[in-house]
Image (cartoon, rainbow, N blue to C red; front, top):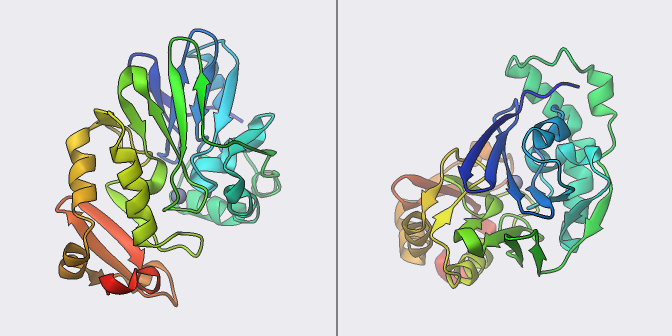
Length: 268
Ligand SMILES: [Zn+2]
């Protein structure tokens, strides 16, 4: 296994790691230890990438259990996650690996350091559970917050010393909450409102390659209203066969794809 991971320091001791599939992870480096938030699709040697930045002990935290965030967990002693996320993790970082392999080969990626059998046969890794807490990394703190929405056990991270929010997949330029394990739009909105009470100034989304100013988060949240959802929704049934998936635009550059059947009644 090789590492094609690219690293970029986004702000002081906050690194974005990007794997060969183009998936972003975040590494927070304190003076005592480091915290890696998410671990990508699992094709790359993540430790080699982390060790190119720090020699400190590193803990893995999963924002949630989807394959693009969690398939690399087998490289760690354990993967910290919310208890509600265990089934999502074991499914997507386990049985779903064949789909990941197919997706990677369809993209024409260099997988010469793997065989299909080796990748699809890799176990998902060991889950360990964490509640909301503060993790002191030495000079930098990670506040772990339970924010159901994209999944039931989604975790977000706030870094007070950098006024930085890592929202996981609860917020991306394209946010998906139509999978069977996703909560409805009402639940997502409650979690975003909880986050909005924090004094963050910048946001680093897993599916975006730049820091966003807080104003983007505020506009995204402000646009999740029954009126705006109704006014901007269009059918996106192709995203999940058999589900009434719609795409709406909380703000012009952001797309939010949701399951109509999980909309609060008063939003329909
Ligand atoms: Zn996800």
